Image (cartoon, rainbow, N blue to C red; front, side, top):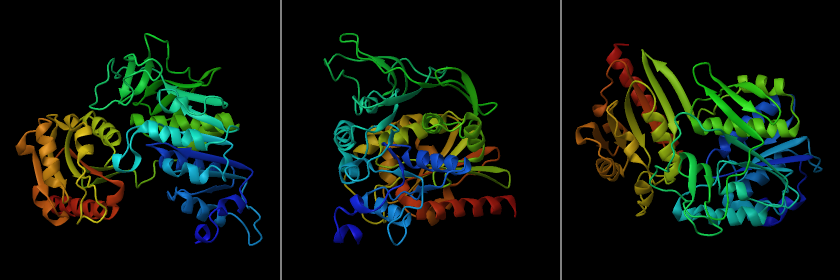
Length: 425
């Protein structure tokens, strides 16, 4: 309502003394919430749109909640998640002191075209005075605001990294300067890794903060901060959440938070349950992971992570391209950009696909080489139950889309009820 009455309302509402924005294709909500939690644990009074209202109206609502009737701001710092496409409507009025970009990758082509298009929007919108916190392992987003002060973070080569791109899509195979084919020193997923051009010398920037070692057994990451190595508690063992945690550490250290305070804060924070949730029910591990449907890299990295976990697995997926489970887009390209081949593993014993697009996902899984006997389809949550195997010693993974929270809740409840029934409880 405020923006309808006054289109430049964001110009007039008072902001905190320090404004931090977080944007990027993947990880911005998790990173925003972790930074907010860490700052609050460290004693800061933080204004944040942690529920994800990241377009202009959501930012307006958040900033309004932080001022008095007479427009006096009651907070010292704001941490705001900003939708990439909304940059041109927000940054002219909300000028961040620090702007974090987690990564830029292929998003829904219906909305965001391609990452270079989004890069141009963000690059034009951000002020020249903003300090950039950027991912050195992303050759696209690391080039944002080339004349601004910048702080880079990266993860050193790890034992399970590859030497050549392996995903179906890669949005940086060609050098943007000379059009030579880029070479990768190592690649983690899609175009995320260390890259160089053999012709003109373009290469990934040197990182100011680097994860040198990932110790999953002891739940620690070792971070070099330019002077020394320090061990931090690992919030999540998935590589994409290790990037999110490194982003948080990089910002907090740059902002001036003491190292011990950061460690204490990270030991207390967790990934928001709407993104990741794990529980044990009658001896069965039930793990829920959000994978943004329509966004191939986001789905692929989740599939890769789950397929690499030890032990036998049973998957229930709802990755619809519709928010109402009735109507559906004709755009199926994201399915064929997504690496369903990661799910063609013998320890993934059963896959149940739910939703009105279930048979389209079945076709994609068959093209990925998954045996027909291991894939089952159900357009409804109720019909899904008959296909659950629930073998003892098998973990149940629920993979769901951001726009399917209501259906996910019903699926989770149905899975838990079925487990209790099988267990005789």
